[in-house]
Image 1 (spheres, one colour):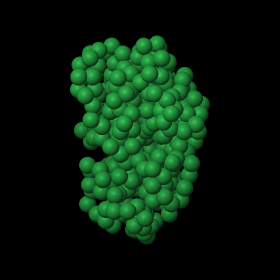
Image 2 (cartoon, helix red, strand yellow):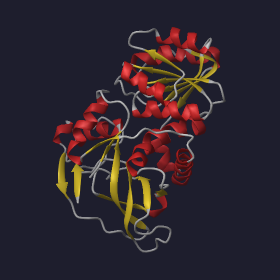
Image 3 (tube, one colour):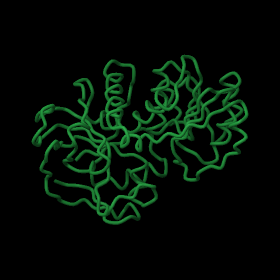
Length: 323
């Protein structure tokens, strides 16, 4: 099978596509023919050695995969060859096949395209985890989403809207704001040209209830200052690069709460809880409560270019690699 391989941490253009032996499932394991593998901002950071998680090299990047079961190991009764499944595999996803524990698989309903399923896992699970496990939103509360045109941002708009919230989408370009409006955002802020704190307060009638921030950098403090009494500020990541320094008195004021969100770390601590989260997500997509957009598709050979585009934030929405 073909696989994208990171032989050493460094520039993404050093990634190579290699021929590797097909995996053979052991006890309790399943082999999946990969139909699509989601590409995420964090994948590029890992390959560059810029993330807190540093796997032993060489390794195959890619954590979210959808496809069909091609082989089952001894002791696996719940899955059969041909079943449509998805899995958050940690590593190994950018390949023609991936092996995973049978207990980690989730069925993909027939109504959901496999490429769409592969694009769901990291972005939508992060946001469902954020807005239902790490905090909660009530109907008609205001949610400010930073970086609203990216994969995480669009998922945030969709999930918050499904939970009954009103969303203000903040992003850097008109096309990203248009994508957020199409996903259900009630209002927008072009934060490269508008005052984020002032506009968020104006649009929400005094302040937002929840901030979803996967961007960090210079937009973090004004977004925190835009929250009202008992507001919650959810720290998802730092796509802009710099980790912001925030005056902690702004947390004390108005009884605000800072909420750290590390869905990836939680999946290893509570795999059964994560499986329940993914099953809940699949149900919400299947019954029409969530509306993920169809991802763009690229071949494995373009993995480095796709990750570069995610890191420089030049791509809107989600991209999957199709072996």
